[in-house]
Image (cartoon, rainbow, N blue to C red; front, side):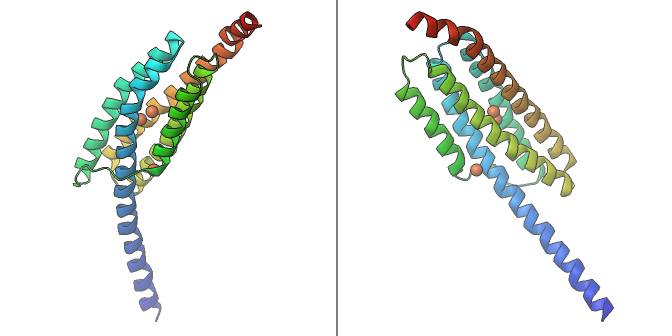
Length: 183
Ligand code: FE
Ligand code: FE
Ligand code: FE
């Protein structure tokens, strides 16, 4: 009796692990799709930005994003699965909002603030995904994959910090000056 229960428990633990494996692969496909979409959006955001600091930040992150796509391909390789994307409705929605801001605030002093907000929403989505993927990779014993995911996680966090810094300096200096000029 006790033995049978033990067996049930261990086999259900095994199932859980293979489910987590599937979830890990599915979520990798989600962020792979997202990164590729971000890669297409970043040049448009760089072009739209008014402050050169913000344009530079977007351009730098575009280069990083290319490396992040390559890292994800390495992770797919490590788990022996094909690198494929799976529609991520969240990133489509976040990027659509960014596009809306670009269209509606074209020529406005508030455009950069809107772009910064949109970009930070993207980074926060990525930070949540990479944090989760790293934890799952470790749980599944993919230590090399966890290391790669952590490298990208660090870049996304750095980008978020940089965007916050730009937003603060824009609000405190440029934004104030421009408001004064307009009045
Ligand atoms: Fe990214
Ligand atoms: Fe998603
Ligand atoms: Fe990013």
